[in-house]
Length: 282
Image (cartoon, rainbow, N blue to C red):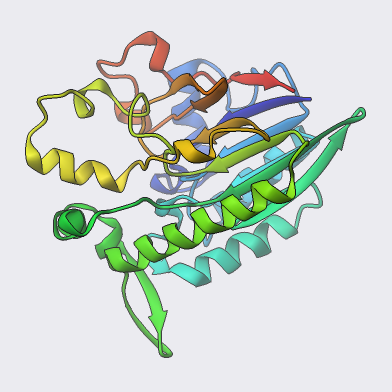
């Protein structure tokens, strides 16, 4: 089974899908999904667009028509200017319009192509934010200004305690789900990164980071090395706007992130750039 993956397209910054396609083509010389060598599985690891807009549905429709199976997880930006749980329901609803599109939020799906079976386990995830970092993360991340959440039938702004709780629930769910699928080919898909090193630009991972940046980094990645073991065969993530590929315990931990087109690749090592036709095989 050939599995292509990408994330952080940020189609929401354009008036419609055609505008995004125009910018994409001017950057890469082709329309998105045009260069793909495989049409089997496409994984979209979050921050694709605004699920409340037609451009999001239009893109999923395009993916659905070009691939046999499409796997989708939410990113934090999908929730901007909206209520968190409403967005999750909307993503589930839009994905359900297409028989071969699967939205995963603490959910798994087993798919089969030509006799090969793979279980995709997915969630947005969020991250572990220590108590000592929560004030800085709350003040520095747009998430907590741009996303609302319902509590006691009233809408309020999302806070770090909310996302930290969702993270803990997600890790518990991932742990239990992996136990259910021992002996199978499992691919985990999350938006946030599952390791602390090798997942972001070296600018944010160097040893002499200032204290403020160190605290902010907790909003992007967590140490989930305890989950990087059988039956996991691959872990796909996004969020950091830095494409990377590393092996941990023999398991590829990989991302293929476009980021904001206007700023994409500035000062980026060629090995860490978004490449549309990024595919692995199980």
